Image 1: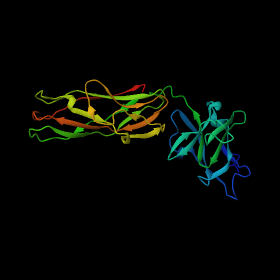
Image 2: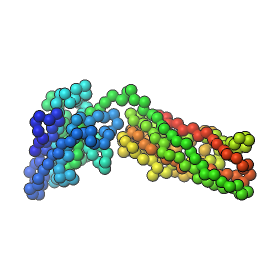
Image 3: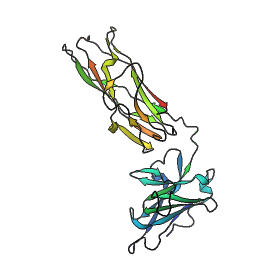
Image 4: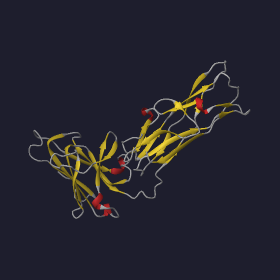
Length: 284
């Protein structure tokens, strides 16, 4: 079965005998690839995507999906580096090359590329939604950037005892698109001071980053990890709170740390502020 021959990108499926236990209606629904989520970092999608249906249909033997494209579709792109993106859980993942196309291993996997024939083939044991992806030059992209928000600490009524209050912030967005060598986020802080130069030592100010508070926005599903899952004191020296290993964390992620401040019993009244410094750096 195949799509129309006049389309800029076409798709067909070859199902061997024995792959299905009985008659089954097969569909290929084409759509604009711009309707899909963002492709993996460093990739762009060709103009059309294809849903092979029924979605989730499985096969006893591997089937072959063939995608054909026009020269105009890949103008300026490296055809030998074309790959296929697969829709999984609301995001796109790169389909790897086959280690063994006869099984297939993994499934699905890219089994062949033919720039001369303008085709790329995938073998799979189930149906889903696919689009052809091509690498793009990201050398002009600034790979590492983090956008932060202010930390707000709850007020206290001094009563002659040590009191611990919570602090909060909106999500800090780490943009690590194009950074494949790993990266990390660090935090430091000054002492808290008021207008009369009274202080609350920074050692009373603690931070943690729960794993649940690291959220993928786009890019790699291999998220950075928290290196500070329990509360510990900040200082004037940078403390690492998140780290992405080499080959992981190539994307955009929201980090939302939590804070605690212990206000000592001997603290003077007043409004206190501190300067929190957040940095994102290359390397895990």
